[in-house]
Amino acid sequence: MKKNLFTLGISFTFLSVLWAVLLFYGLNMTGYIKIAKPLPQWLMDPVGFAIMHLRSSLIFFIILFCLYVYFVMKIRALLKNPSAKPSQLFFFDRLLNITISSFFAVGVIWTAVGMESALLQALSGFQTSSSPGQANQPGALDIMDRLVNGGLLIALSTTIVGGGLGYILRFLKVLFIGPAWDEYIINI
Image (cartoon, rainbow, N blue to C red; front, side, top):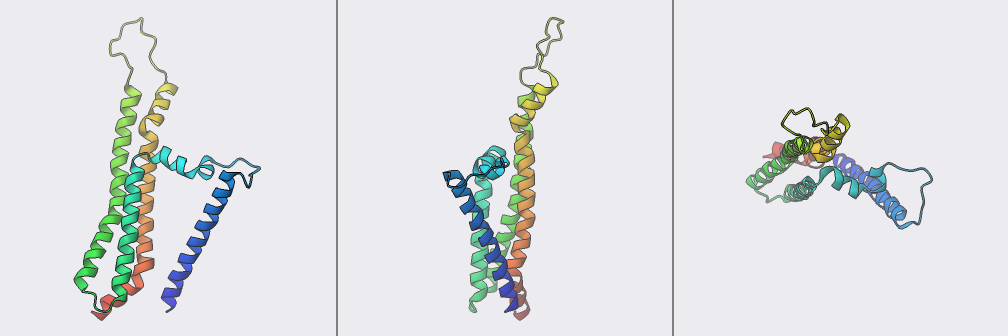
């Protein structure tokens, strides 16, 4: 019983913080409250910030997160059902592990896509001939700007988000399923 209370307490704490943040964000965006000190962009417009940094990888992260929630809920429901077959539980556990690993995969794949895009963007416009009259080559700051805006930002962001979510979701799996799963395995 204490294990379930701990998980319930963590869940309620997380949901309370989430609702407080959403309420604060909504009141700020509608103008009901004003913040005297300017906040970082990710606090003022988290959705826009996520879209800017993750671009199309955000779609895959959202799909994977929905699958993660579904599989966790399915496993928890099966663990509460005494007539659940072990094969069902093991199947959904494997699917959950694959979903968690897919967060790492999306991060790695979009890192490669972002790096390729950044390099192609940075190197576009260079003249290949070396005639002395061509002084119109982009400078170092222009190349750096092209790298960052061309895909380096998405490459770094997806690496961090994919890796971070992968490890966090592994931890949450143990927290939300672990005690009941261990008890089920012992009783088989």
